[in-house]
Image (cartoon, rainbow, N blue to C red):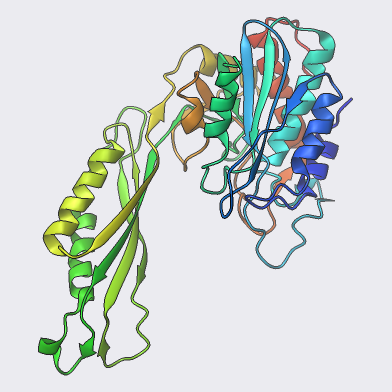
Length: 380
C-alpha cells in the first residue's frame, strides 16, 4: 500500500521550483500507474515561463467524475536549510512543499489507492500542474482545455491547497478574491535639484497617483468576502545621486477584490486616475483571476461532513487568502479547497505534522467514500 509519508518525502526530494519539474511528476506518475490509473503527461509552453510539465491521471468511467487538483511545483527554498532533503524532526515532516502542497498530493494518492483497491463506480482523476506558483500560464488552464478536447470533464473537484489555519480540517475554502497587478511608469526630465524649473520631476506625479489610488474605499465586503483592498507593493526611482531630479519613477500595485468588483472595471479606473495625474505615464495590467464563489451546497457539505466524521470538528467555510488554480477549475465544475495547515508555507523550514498527513489522508478517504457512496474505508 502507498504510504503518504513516504510518497511525500519522495516528492519533496525533487527540487521542482517553478517551472522545473525535477522528477516530481515521474514519482507521482509511477505511484498512480501502480494502482491502475491511466497517466497522461502533457507539456505546454516555451521559455522563459515554460516548458511546464503537467499530469492528468484517471481511472474508472461514468458518473460521478470526481477530481483532485494540485501542483508539484514549489517556490524557491530560501537560505539556511536543506529544503529538498526531507526529514522527520520531532513528529514534523520538514521540507519545501511539505505544506504547499506535496503533502496533500501524497495524502490524496494514498486515499485514492484505498478506494480504488476496494472498488468503486464512477471516475476518479488527478489534475496536477507544475506552474501554480509561477505565472500559471502553461498549467491548469491549458490542461483543462486538453482534458475537454478528450472528453474529460469532472463533476466535482477538491484542490489540496493548505487551507487549514491551526488544525487539519478547520477551514474549507469555497472561493477566492480576484487579483490584479499593475505596473506604472511615470516619465520626467532629469535635471539639477537646484534648478527645478529646468527639469520635470516624475516622483511628484507618481506620488499624486498613488495617493489617489490609496484613498479609494472600494466596498465594505460582501456576504462571503472581506473588503477589496489596494496595496502599493513597490516604488522605484533608481537614482544614485542626491542632487539630481530623476528621469523616471515607477511603482507596482496589487488589488485583491471581492465579488462586488470586476477586473476590467478596476483596470479602467486605474487608467483614468493615471491619465488625470500623469498623462504621459504608461501602465501594464495583469488580472490573475476574478473573484469566485462556490455557493455552499452539495460539494462543501460533503467535504464538511467528511471532516466532521474524521475529526469531530465543523470546518469554517472561507474565501480568505491568495489566489489558487481553483480560479480556473470553477469554470468547469463546483470546486472547494482543503489541505494541510499552511502556517509555514513559503517559509524557510516549511513543515507539517506527520499526524496531520495521516488525518488528511483519512479525510480524503471519507470524501471519496461519500462521493462514490461506498462503505466507509477510513483509517479513523
